[in-house]
Image 1 (tube, rainbow, N blue to C red):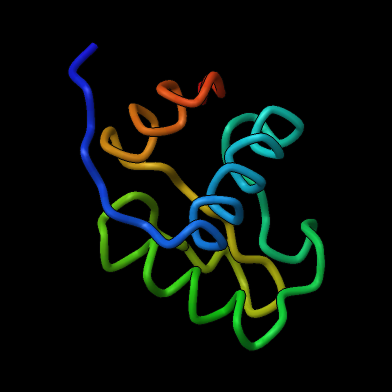
Image 2 (cartoon, rainbow, N blue to C red; image 1 turned 180 degrees about the vertical axis):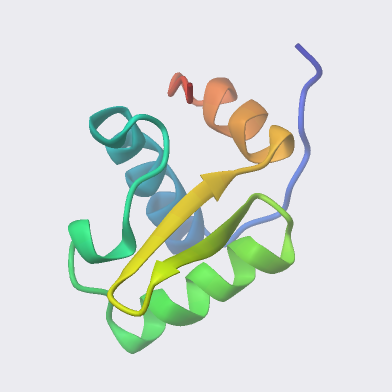
Length: 85
């Protein structure tokens, strides 16, 4: 696997790894609504993760939004010992 070099602030990386770790409970696609409540700062960090093309969010319906990991995001998670399906 190719090593991914992405610059993330420590709190943003921590959020990314939390979401990646939770993905195993949701067939690799955790719903935003099934995770911890996001603070305004976390919402900004989620936006940063999307801008870095590590993940994207799909609206299943107005009350259900799934997080999908890109290949880059899955590779970054794997570098930290978290496997995404």
